[in-house]
Image 1 (tube, rainbow, N blue to C red):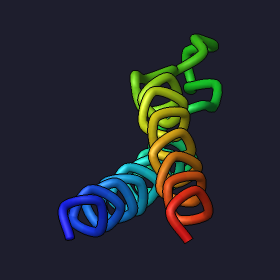
Image 2 (cartoon, rainbow, N blue to C red):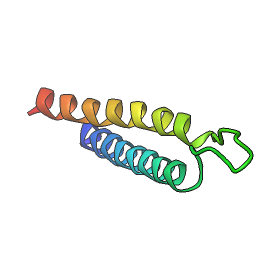
Image 3 (cartoon, rainbow, N blue to C red):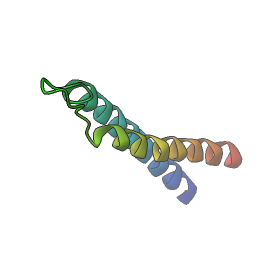
Length: 72
Protein backbone atom coordinates (compact mmCIF):
# COMPACT_ATOMS: atom_id res chain seq x y z
CA UNK A 1 0.00 0.00 0.00
CA UNK A 2 2.74 2.45 0.95
CA UNK A 3 4.81 1.65 -2.16
CA UNK A 4 1.81 2.58 -4.30
CA UNK A 5 1.66 6.02 -2.68
CA UNK A 6 5.37 6.56 -3.27
CA UNK A 7 5.06 5.54 -6.93
CA UNK A 8 2.06 7.81 -7.38
CA UNK A 9 3.82 10.77 -5.77
CA UNK A 10 6.95 10.18 -7.86
CA UNK A 11 4.89 10.03 -11.03
CA UNK A 12 2.94 13.19 -10.19
CA UNK A 13 6.11 15.04 -9.18
CA UNK A 14 7.83 13.98 -12.39
CA UNK A 15 4.93 15.14 -14.54
CA UNK A 16 4.71 18.50 -12.74
CA UNK A 17 8.45 19.09 -13.15
CA UNK A 18 8.32 18.25 -16.86
CA UNK A 19 5.34 20.58 -17.35
CA UNK A 20 7.28 23.35 -15.58
CA UNK A 21 10.26 22.66 -17.86
CA UNK A 22 8.05 22.96 -20.92
CA UNK A 23 6.56 26.22 -19.62
CA UNK A 24 10.04 27.64 -19.03
CA UNK A 25 11.13 26.65 -22.52
CA UNK A 26 8.08 28.32 -24.05
CA UNK A 27 8.73 31.48 -22.02
CA UNK A 28 12.35 31.49 -23.19
CA UNK A 29 11.29 31.14 -26.82
CA UNK A 30 8.63 33.85 -26.56
CA UNK A 31 10.38 36.54 -24.57
CA UNK A 32 14.14 36.01 -24.72
CA UNK A 33 16.97 34.55 -26.73
CA UNK A 34 17.19 37.12 -29.47
CA UNK A 35 19.36 40.09 -30.29
CA UNK A 36 17.85 43.38 -29.20
CA UNK A 37 17.77 46.52 -31.33
CA UNK A 38 20.92 47.76 -29.60
CA UNK A 39 22.83 44.60 -30.62
CA UNK A 40 22.85 42.98 -27.17
CA UNK A 41 21.92 39.32 -26.82
CA UNK A 42 18.98 38.98 -24.45
CA UNK A 43 19.13 35.87 -22.30
CA UNK A 44 17.16 34.82 -19.26
CA UNK A 45 17.11 32.20 -16.55
CA UNK A 46 14.29 30.33 -18.25
CA UNK A 47 16.63 28.16 -20.33
CA UNK A 48 18.68 26.93 -17.34
CA UNK A 49 15.45 26.43 -15.39
CA UNK A 50 14.22 24.23 -18.22
CA UNK A 51 17.06 21.80 -17.62
CA UNK A 52 16.88 22.16 -13.84
CA UNK A 53 13.22 21.05 -13.94
CA UNK A 54 13.62 18.52 -16.75
CA UNK A 55 16.38 16.37 -15.23
CA UNK A 56 14.67 15.66 -11.87
CA UNK A 57 11.37 15.19 -13.72
CA UNK A 58 12.83 12.41 -15.83
CA UNK A 59 14.55 10.89 -12.79
CA UNK A 60 11.27 10.85 -10.84
CA UNK A 61 9.39 9.25 -13.72
CA UNK A 62 12.12 6.67 -14.22
CA UNK A 63 12.11 5.87 -10.51
CA UNK A 64 8.35 5.35 -10.53
CA UNK A 65 8.66 2.97 -13.50
CA UNK A 66 11.50 1.05 -11.84
CA UNK A 67 9.53 0.75 -8.61
CA UNK A 68 6.46 -0.41 -10.51
CA UNK A 69 8.39 -3.11 -12.35
CA UNK A 70 10.26 -4.18 -9.22
CA UNK A 71 7.13 -4.74 -7.17
CA UNK A 72 5.04 -6.23 -9.95
